[in-house]
Length: 288
Image (cartoon, rainbow, N blue to C red; front, side):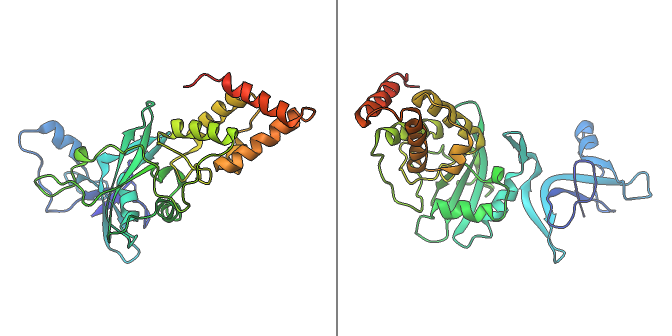
């Protein structure tokens, strides 16, 4: 058994790679399929026998510290998200470490704007719906940010094929309902909060956003943050640095930051005049 990277180098313990099988038990190839045989049965770089072959299984696996081999899924399920190549099986393996989750499947889906996003389908161990904020925090402790799914769908069971494997084609599209977060939903109050909540909901493809909701807990990432900042600049007609969103990732915090910028810009106006100017700017923005 060998676990190798794409250049056929052995991977370190804990790192995922493709499972290869060598030795006298390896078959000669696929019957009447010479092209597939050449693709899957490759020369064994670890053998002195020139005729020896390694079988590329197409399975994703990794060595554990105790010497065991952990199966992570199919290698050919690799997806590309925002320039990063991701193995969904690695994310599913982390879900398996969470006692609150009985089963999980991760797939890449179109987000409606031509971009791909990761969607996690989870089956809880008990009857209680898992808190999405807690799930994200759990994943962030073990995975880089780009591997944390943007959307979560809670199911009673994963759909299966007749052979008992997860039927990924039968997994439902995520709905646009706001996920169950740690903090309760609080509706926008001020004009600035209402405008920002509308922008966030449109960019994140969810039905509503509360003023205490964290942008990144709702599935936001750096690319979507750029879109939000651009929309906010248009809406309020101000110079809004992108870092402002990262420093103030809630509607309430971002609205305060924007109002501070506006205050510095219109400090010589009365409160009524400032509110009127803000209203004029909001009215000037075409809905998208």
